[in-house]
Image (cartoon, rainbow, N blue to C red; front, side):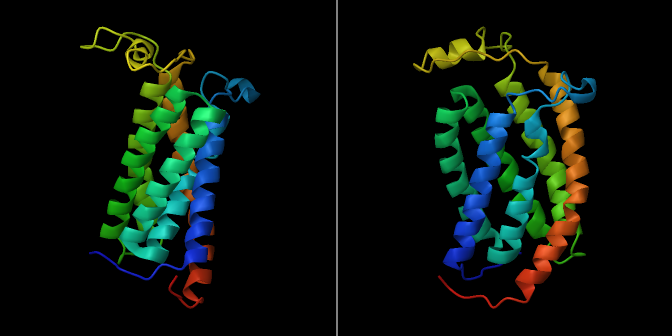
Length: 210
C-alpha cells in the first residue's frame, strides 16, 4: 500500500541532515577497528553508528510515506557519497553508496508492507532484513583485496581502469561483517524504544505542507 503525505520542508531537512551525519560519520569510523575487549578483528566503530540510518529511514517512512522516504534516501545518498569521497576513501564511498541505496530502498518497501501491523514490527523486521543486505554489499566491496572471481582483477585494479586511484584497506572483512551484523541486530532491537517515542511525538504534531 502506497501512503502519500505532504512533506513539511523543515521535517524533511531534519531527516536529511540526520541521514547525512549518520552515513558520513559511519564511513569515517568504519576505517577504525574497535580495539577494546580484543574485538579489533571483529568490529569497527562504524558498526555502532550506521544502524541508526535505518531508524531515520523508518521514521521518514512513517512521517512522509514511501515517496518522501525515498527522497530522503536519494538526497542523503548524494550528500554522503560526495562528502565520503573527501573525508573517507573513494572505495568506501562507493561501497557505502551501493549498500546504502540497495538496503534503504529495500527497508522502505518492507516497512510499507508491514505498515498496518503492530507499531514496532515494521521498523524491526525491515531493519533486520535490510541490514543483512547492507552488510554483505558493503564489507565485500570495501575491504576485499583479493582477485574477484570471473573478473581476473582486484577491485582496486578495476577501479584503476576508470581512473579512480584506490588502495585497499586490508581488514578481516568476513569476521567484521558477521560481527557488524550482530551489532545491527542488537541496535535494531534497542532502536524500537526511541522509534516509539519519536513516533508518539510525531503523531501529536500537525502535518503542514512545505
